[in-house]
Length: 155
Image 1 (cartoon, one colour):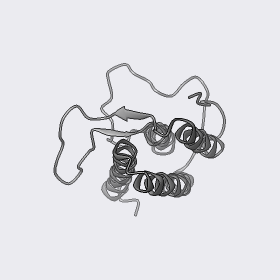
Image 2 (cartoon, rainbow, N blue to C red; image 1 turned 60 degrees about the vertical axis):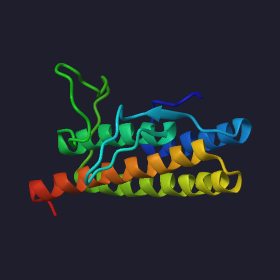
Image 3 (cartoon, rainbow, N blue to C red; image 1 turned 45 degrees about the vertical axis):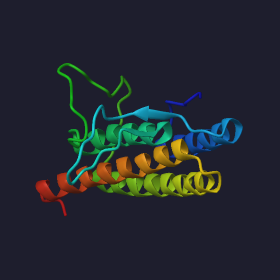
Image 4 (spheres, rainbow, N blue to C red; image 1 turned 120 degrees about the vertical axis):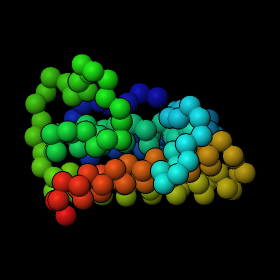
């Protein structure tokens, strides 16, 4: 599936979700990515797999988080010397990031709801697993964002 990497994130997300649903309609499955090698339990129970669209959105949100807060959320381990943000200079602020994250979460949850309904209608366990993994990934992402805000005292 072709993914647009340029432009405003709020323009890219609906296009990504539309293409993801078209892919589902054509193939009766969703693209999923492995995000955990093993079982991770505890407060943040990371799934082994999540839908490709959810992983992509979370990565895009992490880039926006880094721009807004001038540091990563802690959700991802940074490899020394790795700079995920490209050559284009972007600016943002924490309030805009929060609005962006809420809208992105709304779009993704609506999409996941539709996919989960389809998966239940067709007893499609791989699609249901990918959508549940995507919801868990989104929940964990927002948990990291809230933790960062609470620790920095920006409540």
